[in-house]
Image 1 (tube, rainbow, N blue to C red):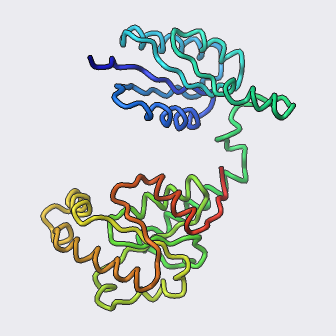
Image 2: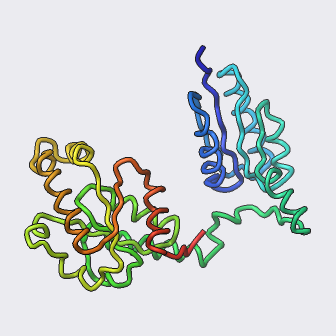
Image 3: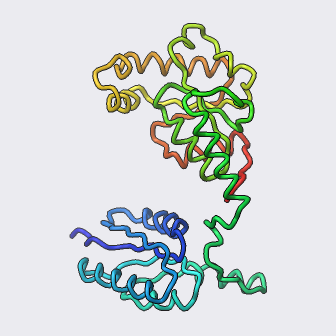
Length: 275
């Protein structure tokens, strides 16, 4: 017998990013579940809370099984209303904050939006600065101020450098640039001139030829760029170049962007600037 589809709601009085991340991480531990995940952000009034309850209850009726609610609602009165829904209500503030209050001997503020809030000016500007830097130094477009990068990702085109750089900048506040190796680099068997003084900032990504062919074929089907033999050649030469230059590198084939970014943070000993 297959499991019925079940609805999961991530509910917050702000963006719901924390509820989404925690809830999704918990639910992915259960194999075989058919889940419909819905985010309900900015539930910051009693009226909105009542509307959320109606949506949650309606989903339960449709599914034939009660939904799951992951809540990061800071205000106890609003949380109490949502908690009346016919659902499993998991209140992150009660699960985590109450034991912390007991341990620390202090009351939490239960203030809205402490985690992802533009009012945290320092974090906000650090994130914007790092994202702007990363976008300006994507794909080797600009080598200006390259020395200001915290890390420079290198590797063949379409191996995952850009999304990893953006994740590093968005989540950690890292100034991450990236530079693609091209056939001319393999011919000279040397690092591009702009990268040679910055060898200590370089970190490489690689990928299997078949996966690279699949990715490139979506962009330029039936091209030399996407040809399997060309992919094999570029990866072989890129890995050889990185080994000669003592550049550490990761295989991105089966790793998520989150895994790649976290591994780079640890191995390159980068300091997180934002939370």
